[in-house]
Amino acid sequence: MKFNSQLLKELVSIYGPSGNEKFIRDYIETEIKNYVDEIITDDLGNLIARKKGNGNKIMIAAHMDQIGLMVTDIDDDGFLRFTNIGGISPYITLSQQVVFENGTIGVISAEPIEDISKLKLSNMYIDIGTNNKEETEKIVDIGDICVYKSDYNENDNVVFTKSLDDRVGCFVAIESIKQIENNVNDLYFVFTVQEEVGLRGAKTAAYRIDPDIGIAIDVTGSGDTPKAKTFAIGLNKGTAIKVKDNSILTHPKLRQFMIGVAKENNISYQLEVLEYGGTDSGAIHLTKEGVPSGVISIPTRYVHSTIEMASKNDIINSIKLLSKMLEDNIKL
Ligand code: CO
Ligand code: ZN
Image (cartoon, rainbow, N blue to C red):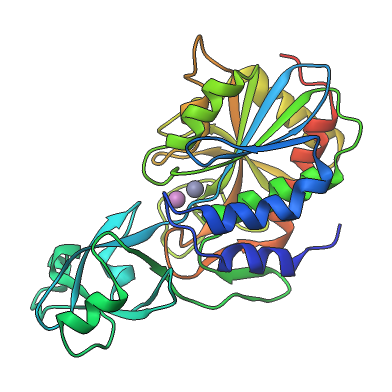
């Protein structure tokens, strides 16, 4: 399988913080519409694409939204104060460039601080290079959201880019949609909204679809960097089959099914026990009377930073695992 760098590069570069997923949704819709039987956007903004089958209903979720910074105030000199949309670290954010939907560029800085460990988002500001409040108000409003600005790069092993969380999950889902033929199961691929602010799109989409089984595709962390906290996940060691995070305990039969598919097809995999965080499957599995659910994770370094890193081999193995699972007849 060839690694489609161009597609991933485009996916990570499109503006789409939580609640503002229109551009990324339009892009994905154009990319997949010829490969699915039905495609709709629901009232919250989730893109739901169906590949019809006669077997169990399977919901596959990857979130389209990315983290961002929302403007809360504009001062007399034209500087912007902000709050976080999703998990934003003050240390990672300091001195970074950001970009708004209308293309306005800003740089993040902080009030003078003696003890850097006391750095908080509330002491930081965005400077968009205007002279005063009036000038700022012409281009940025309260409630506008900016996202990190950084370049996409890759070498033979890895990609370096912002927003792998979770555009790489969208990438895996899109590449699977293109490959899968003659599926037995009734497949609902959902590109969800507002995951980063609490799995909101996945919750309403799961209610609508009422699936028999749920699978989320998302990034996870890694424990393979210097003095990292013990975590048996590393880059280039395979796709990760989640056992648990803070939002879900993967249904044991589904986990066994996933492991079986990986073994049968010689797909390298690792088992993931994450002691924090959650994914869309956390919302899906609690729908109605309960939906057995699991997660395919892409091991990723520096999650929620301006340059996240993942292994191309792991991404390809994730596509293979998802495609092979969905071509099989999933019955638990
Ligand atoms: Co995230
Ligand atoms: Zn995510």
